[in-house]
Length: 235
Image (cartoon, rainbow, N blue to C red; front, side, top):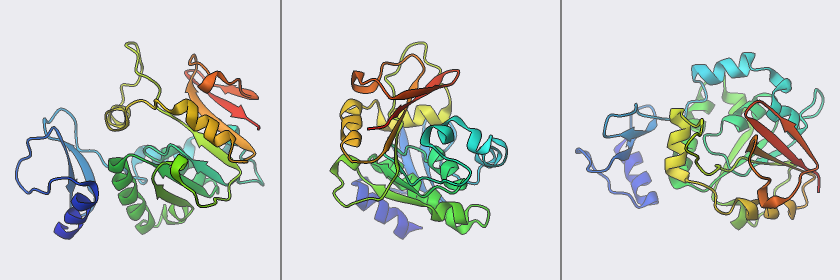
């Protein structure tokens, strides 16, 4: 455990300590997992768990291929497209897509989320219920816009963080954590432009329902839900 903590601290350029930290948030390496701890005690420790009750319920009873994200990427009974999730975050949409048979390549550029995702995937591979799902998920730590190796894919999925509003409904702990770690995506417009130039047949962008189009570029079609929508581009 100490070796694992030392490796993470060196990789991220963080201070390694076993005493009470003066920082509000710390990465803590436990015997079973890596978690993000709020040292103020306002929120419980957080870690990525692909075997959580919420994800297990969604995987079993969430609607399968009828879910909006699945319809948006073109998942069909006899077709499981290869997906690039360019803004992986907590990896939940990627996990659901992989659970339905899609090979998914996840990109995450935030170093803290990278560590949490790696740890979540490691434990997912160790668990019988999620082992085959996590085998279909490949994490690449970095910004897709800086990645030069070829990737075979049919769909690029983008879910950039939308700028916070005073009346925002982003009240869940997980969303607050992502916002604190990642912030908004000031380069979201260029991310879409980059995706459109990759030569991949389908780009899907998840947006709040009333948010403007990324780059003010009108999509080929939209799939709307109560509070969000999926903009679909067929370049």
